[in-house]
Image (cartoon, rainbow, N blue to C red; front, side, top):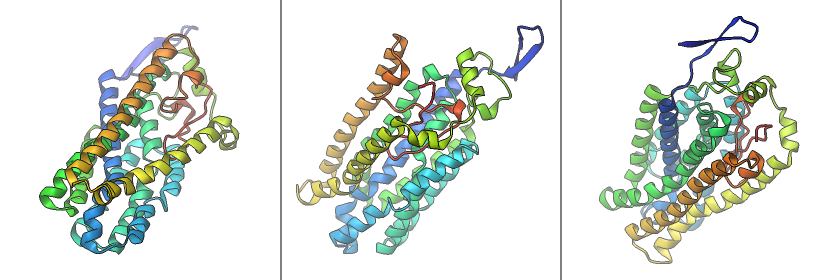
Length: 342
């Protein structure tokens, strides 16, 4: 369906139909679920660490090696995913990632060993590397620039919800069916999400690649930005914004690695907490992060509405991605994309 508008010179201009607000928020909800599954996959090793080590006879060094294996190819996957999403549609990329996440969990369910866990975590890390930049790139295609902060905060805030949901659920599964089924449940969850995305997932209209001209209902500044072309990667790498986010991303994943691998194990072994209590403590930690993330997006939009520049309003919020610039430059924790609209 198209909208026919009249050009100032009198000739008709056919533009894409205005996006459905409901569809945009439905996509946002699906991508939030995507990030919940993502962080469930990240944290399951730590949440099952004590039982896993005892059952398989792993030493702390072997367990730590498996934990770090997740990050062996994580950075490569992040950068590769950032380049790919700049050239192909996000919908099939997200579907492929969801399927891979699900499939790699089942070998652990059926044939758990040091080698199987090691291989599964390496493949999972590679496939999960692009999750944040691709999800943000996808959701921002559904909203104009001045309305992107809240949906971005929802998608990134779902990362904390992933641990918030996974911790008590994995504790229940572990007590009821054993630690192996924690991986099996996550595999099933990934397959269910992939099926839903296959039915629901669509590309948003706020993307230069999907239009042949200025979008109907878009502001002149948005149309000008869309016509400005690509930002060279070297220019991005030289920017202070990218460097600041690179440093913060490094620090973020130092903490993330500890939180998802060793903190649950410490609570279960050294602190002596039972499985359910450990899950509750981890859920409480994640709840604080979720509140902080959702609040940042709301605060950012509040400041922008009152005339604060986007560059000043967004530093503490999920980073801005300019879909019209078509750069989904990836970083570990949150993928910033320096752009003129920020």
